[in-house]
Image (tube, rainbow, N blue to C red; front, side):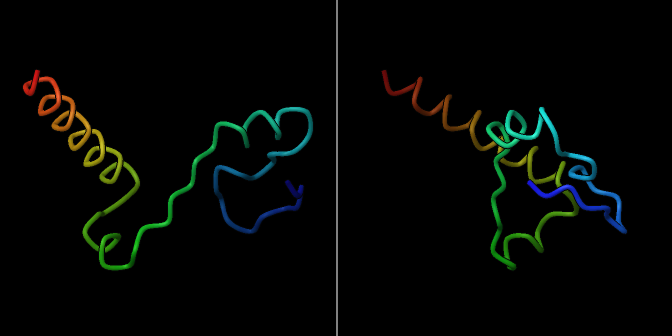
Length: 65
């Protein structure tokens, strides 16, 4: 990863050096389609919706057995 100063605050500022590779291994970035992204106010709303969906899938799979 590049170590360049940023003019905006984001989670990647200062991410270089010995921890950069470890962070990159765990990082998952998913780009949402514009129409899907418009349905969510922020990152937390997306995470909450995905967690709710996954809980529903787990319940549905568990009820089939």
